[in-house]
Structures are given as structure tokens and as C-alpha cells.
Length: 434
Image (tube, rainbow, N blue to C red; front, side):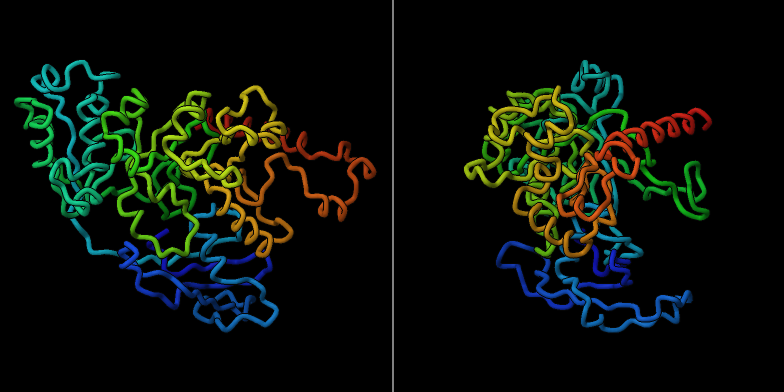
């Protein structure tokens, strides 16, 4: 989101546009390391029949073009993909190449017999020593005499619990400081530095859909099971301490995603990525959303004082089907798992609201209605898409009744359910064949 400087799209109204920021103001005094975008300008292509890109003509959009490019810039960058139009290209700002290294726990006999003895799941990555060290380095770096810049240079995905760092970092020295802080003698050689020469992926490898292109990762398909991420505010961990945070979440804290870096200070303040995402120190994967979670844990992490504004708290990546917030009329109680989809939609805080928060979701929905008033672009759980397949009253009034035209029930949900079943069978056959 923060590296995009221009976007090219085809919008639901048929216009082929490209747009990007054209005016900024300094935001350093507000704590940001990038300027604030205060104006976005766009152009429309006036010869859509021309196939030769070198002959395309870009001019000011016509007078009846009613899309605000500032709104579109805000919505597309963070507001969910596939719902505002077709993105054809993006221009990204690049940075100087810097060293990429990681620091993995050693699997030597000595380290496994001492420092990493009896690791959970037989993997030293999940050992409490590594879990605590990683959380401390990322969220309370001053404890280890690590600067904010050095801390932000490192992260970890996939529950690795060991630092992967770009550029200047201070992991080796901080490891020694951490061991001394824990009164652990020895272990200096149990964290191994490894230089990484990029992540090359061969074109035309298995899974490639287009010749000369790298494969999709992850591959399109159906999720094998629910996997949701709760965003843990860095400020909360700093307030209560790393150990208390780990104790509160237990072994689940080991299944963490540290990939936020400078997100809190690198925003141009004109995008819809949730503030919870930017303020997060870590995202804990697959945490159970039971009554204990909503009653005891959530109020510690997020501000629930305004009953009209549900705060964002889930990560938009790794948000699986069925994710909802708590009951609409009682945020201390979970959405009942035995409710039907229709009951969950009516009685629980929605998937989108739990990710974006009430205020941002309202703005995104308003932008969606202007850009795509006929809801041409729909995707599962995207802004403006009703997952039951039902329609607003004004849409229903403009369409023939399905019972009258012989299509059966006026609800399209059974037909969509049948389509999903067909797609699942197709996916299963494809997996078996491959």
C-alpha cells in the first residue's frame, strides 16, 4: 500500500483511468516518515478502441465523470481487492537493495540439549526462549538496547519466531543482552546468522498460469480451514510487558506474524488500511473467538467505550470465511457458531466491520456505491458484497420476480450454494488429477 505511486484501472463505468498523488504536505511533526497526500489527480483514456499501448491518448476526464480520484486512491489501497474495478497496473517506488539476513535457532545437539530443550512440536522455533526473544526485539526493543529503526528492519512470518532483517539491525548483540537478562549462561552460538540471496522463483514453474510468469502464491482455491489473525497493539504489549502478553495468549502466541515494520509511521494518510493493522506489533493466528476472548481479552486491547463504533481488530490477510465480530447488541459475547449465515449477518458484527472498523467501513461502502452503483464487481466478503446473495430493496424493485419468471425462489442463495458445491467438486478433481 505505502509503496504505490500510480494505479491504472478500468472502472465499472467503462472508463480506463490512471491516477496518483500530485500534492503533498510534510507530516514529520505528526510522527510520519513520509509526506501526507492531500491531492490525487487522474486521466482518462480517450481512444479505448486502440490496442497499441504506445498510441493510447490520456486526457482530462469528461465533465460527467463523477468519480473522485482521491476517494478511489483511498479505497483501492487497503479497502479490499476486486470490488472497485479491474486493476491493470501499478507503479511502485523502489528502494536501494540492502542486505537480507535471518537468525535461526540452532538445531545442534548442544543447543537442543540445553537452551532449546524439549521444544514444542519438536521445533526450536516454537521454544519459549525464541518466542520471547522475537516479541521483545520487535515490540519492546529498548529493553535490548535496540533502536526503533533497527527493530523495524526485522520481522517474521509463518510463525517462524526468528528475525528476518533488511538493512541495519542489531540482532547478534541483542541476543547476548537477552540471554544475560534471562540469566542464561552460554547459548551465544545457538542463534545462527544466515545471509539470504533473495527469493528466486522460476518462471513457468508448476502452478504457473501464464507463460513467463511466476506462479500464484498461494494458489487460488478453497481454504482447508479457518485461520484468523487478531492484531495485537504494540502499545499494549509495551504497557503490560512481553511476558504478560505471552501468558495471556498462552501457546497461541507462538503462532505469530511479525510483518508490520514501519507501517505505523509510513502512511501517506490517504489509504484505508486499518489503524489496527498499522499499530499492531504482532498478529496471532487462529486464536479462538470464545466468550473469554470477547469478555476478558478484547477490552484490554481495544477501545470499546463508544457503542456506535466497533474498532478494527482482525487482519485482512488470513481472514477466513465465517469470520465475524461479537454479537451486535453485546460485544462481550461471541457470535454463536450454530447460527445460520443469515442469523450471523443479522445479529453479529460483520466480517468487514471487524476488519476495517465502523467508520472506515462506512466510508468504503459510500465510495463503492459511487464507483460501482450497480454492484458489477463482487467478491466474497468484499466491501459492498452481500455474502448471502440477497439484494437491496431498490435492486429488487428493478428486477423481475424469480417466481414469476419460473426461476423458483426469490432468493438466489440456494443457486449460489449449488454453484459453490460445483466449484468445490471441480477443485477436488483438479487436485486429484494433478
